[in-house]
Length: 216
Length: 259
Image (cartoon, rainbow over all chains, first blue to last red; front, side, top):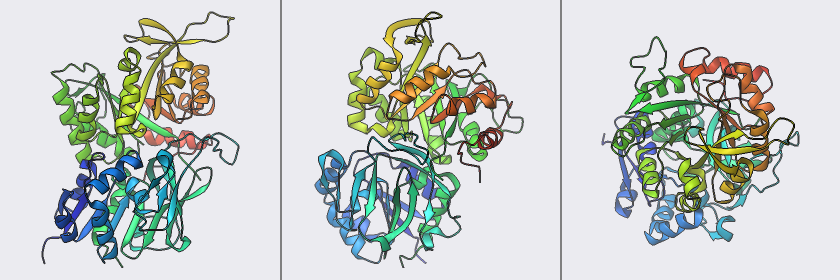
């Protein structure tokens, strides 16, 4: 059997070292390509679409490098695709960040601001960004959740959240003043708001699951 | 159900080695920051902070190498502080694998640096460290000022106003050290911590003065801190991270329990 390859899409926004080393840690045999090259990405067995920073800058770089078409091509194939953080947000229709930014419209939904008046059930003000370890409530079984207990904590850092357009695509939710989607699943696409590469044991398990998932 | 309050062990690093000693009896090399960070990760630490205490230009390469090794082996967030003065310093640390950088004196000398850093790299990775002391006399309304040079030099800057300004400039988190408590083991300066946490929209990490586990609880409940940073109580194995988390949980604070 040929060695399995994972392409980590690199469009210059943030450091992908941690994603690559987390993948190498869970499976030393996997071949990892950190790349912006279309042919390398579509030739890989699996694709990771990460992202940090402001969505306007991310989308501008994605389009400048032609990666909008590459991501759409992978999304339309049967190849497993994992979106992480701003990578997840970029898959949706649009974001409120930076006065409104059109995204890739691969999954239906909007990216919304948490706002400045967020409070918990006791009326305590909640800080934005949503930063730290929150409990992830799995909506239904999925191969990506194998061996990960429901309500496990993952590491988040974001000020904008995904408001899914199709409830059947919600794979997990979190509460932070309001319930919001932290994982979306559709066919070969799985997208998470948290950072699996920074989420210790639970995060590494999710990445290991991705390397085994056949996208179905 | 919700976001956990974080416990962050802080390692002072000098020329690539942990200083102030870490006393884990069963650790292979207690002077190696990555070995120590690994141990804290296994214990359930929520993040790690490395503070480069010399931060000379010559030693920068050593720190970068440590950050790279850390990112290869420990999969929780890492903040690096000490000597972060330019956009290039930030870029190097983020590329090495740091998730956040902590900016201290460079922000005081040039506040615009924080704005430029947040615009370039995103607020999520820009922490502004504030060293503050109470300057009001007894009986006067409480007032705190920023100090530099390890708490020796007053700046005349009001600490609460400064924290607000830094978040306006794009800081995504505030690391607040109670300089009048640092090293005392008397607990955080709670009125200061609370004043700043209530004034800013972003998370506040309380630091300085932790001597026991009740101090961590007080920092969260009375000080309204979103995270607590401590060094010596963990390094000298007076308390373990699981003990700290259990204690906080028993006091009704939401924490992430180790796996």
